[in-house]
Image (tube, helix red, strand yellow):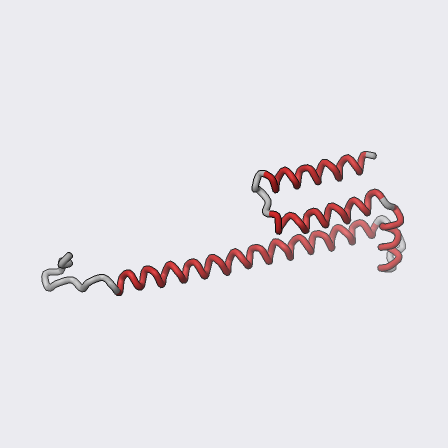
Length: 119
């Protein structure tokens, strides 16, 4: 009963973060998937034993560590992709601003002989 309450509490926390705009929807899907996998691991003993048997792990609780490592690697990969997308957008924005500034400077009239603009 306690694992189910913890799972529901974590799901409610994720929904609250999404609702307040602190977590983007596209980044929340891997967290919900991780929560579902951990829920299956904590509520269903056969799930853990099946994973242990599939990977040839003799002591089934060690399979939980393997599951957590895979979940963490998946979350890290998802966050790395998000950072990479943000970095690409930042570079594109920087280029756009630099081109805009360059066009603005090139269109500026040349200063006259006294060093002052004629504007």
